[in-house]
Length: 199
Image (cartoon, rainbow, N blue to C red):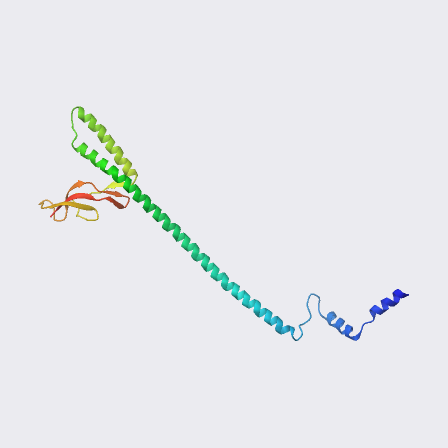
């Protein structure tokens, strides 16, 4: 008997409980009851705070992206600048080393201009000429090219004037004779040509 009484007692609801039960019964499943009085401004404030936080996050995201892109561009420019600087240092060092060989090339050229054409010395001169050609081809492989000066207009960027003299065959300012050859290393002047210039 006691069990039946307890069941009956549970089924009996107070009028306030009945109203609450009706409200929950009319609200569809998965939805909450419509907000009451003070709850609406609290939710509006929360939404406003979330929107402000989102706006700030988007602003910071743009700021960080901009900073990252600038840093990346600066690093790319830095790498290019270092590569150019390394190439310049390499070309300068290469030029300094090669300049010493140009003196040897000049000496071989002078020796060939004064070598005997006949007799025992002629065979020796042929050997010297082969050495000269070999050295010249090695220098050309490194980007060393002789410059043409004789008959050209004097250019202080390419020529060093040793003497200026009157000459009827050449107009004033032209190179009469190349005393020592000038050379290029790639596009830049490695050594100026020493020349005689018509006055």
